[in-house]
Length: 253
Ligand code: A2H
Image (cartoon, rainbow, N blue to C red; front, top):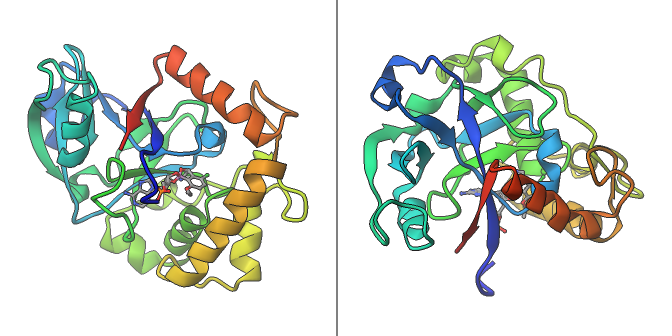
């Protein structure tokens, strides 16, 4: 971080129709939550999407037909990267809180589940990416810890009005084998480092570094079109497939 521009991929997680009342003004558009990821090759392992409950989001018109729900800051950046109808100016149709997005059913590209839900993640930074994070608990320790919190804590599900069926059936999906860490590396690291919850910041940062580095150079794809290839060789191809299929867009910050 902070070493120069990052090349993210914004993945288009389609909000399933009919849209709920809060999003009704958007009903003539295709509406997407658009998480920013550095790991497009991991989208096979998505189990849910995360937003910050108290975060400020907007529904931005990025072309004549498509709306992205993201932070204003991200929309402004996108408008300077050719993703708005007027160059440099972001068009916000509706202001939303993370709270308004919790429990939304989504269709996520490459996910094995037909529907994944929007859940709360309290450690999201609204000044990074889009403020939306897609969750891959097999390979992202933060995602695993947050999903486990929701599974283990009925009171937390209740507080955020998350129904059991939005959380409980979603098991970790093995997608990358990392020698020494296995096929669900983030789970192993969370266990090895005795990470208790999504608030265990220092340990999670350590786990993230370990999984990310070793996974990049030594991880082997277990699924998808790049099955059998190393992550470092598969990443660009997975990204290109998503972009070419219109399921993601490039994003720099
Ligand atoms: B990554 P960097 Cl499988 N707040 O995507 C908190 N985290 C955010 C965020 C925000 N506003 N925006 C993006 N992120 C997450 C997948 C993934 C990611 C895997 C493994 C590692 C990993 C699935 N979640 O990131 O600080 C997103 O999670 C570890 C580097 O800009 C994004 O990629 O380096 C990553 O953090 C961007 O983090």
